[in-house]
Length: 251
Image 1 (cartoon, rainbow, N blue to C red):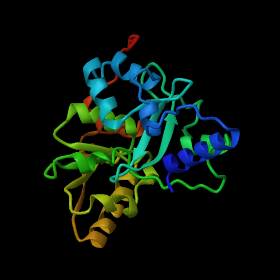
Image 2: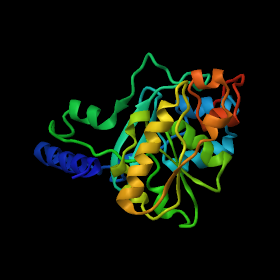
Image 3: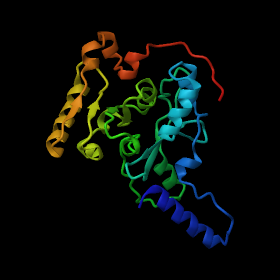
Image 4: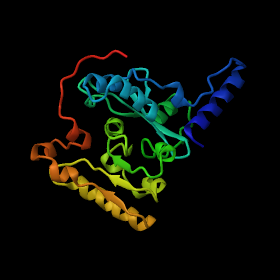
């Protein structure tokens, strides 16, 4: 049973117990939280990564949400349109993560508030995985590390489908299973030693063996990034968009 199913069931049971018959919002959780007013969305536009129109499209594409305290919610919706979980993250005006505020999973908050069973375990998937089904089959699927990069690249290079693992160590063969049979290119972040590239290459090799279909790893960052950029551990979006000044955008 997934988050929305458990949440809906718990809500109905509680309402019945309390004798409440008020109409309730039956839309999926991600629909109830859709917003482009998060810190993340404002920063992307203010820093010039995306125009307001592009941000609106990207937010709709990835179904971006907003938490009560302004954080962005990166919903994980799988290839069957099932909501797996949502990651709440906070960003500074310069469009970098606010590392003073750790990411939080929606499932954790629901369990803490008693809206999900304590033993509920969410099964995470690639961010944007729902796009792999609705997309043209011939379109190449690109997998990056951060959700921010996927959002930016979806408008910078719309001829591809951009998904994200949500972290360097979050890539594994199981998460690539829904993409078996599709043309897939992995874009690992770069680093000073090339460790991330090697780790993602190993996963790609393993997935190729398991599914009998090649998974490619891009070496563009290893080839083009400067030493300073490798120390900074840049990603493909950083390569295309150099650091920039930012303003304030009010949607």
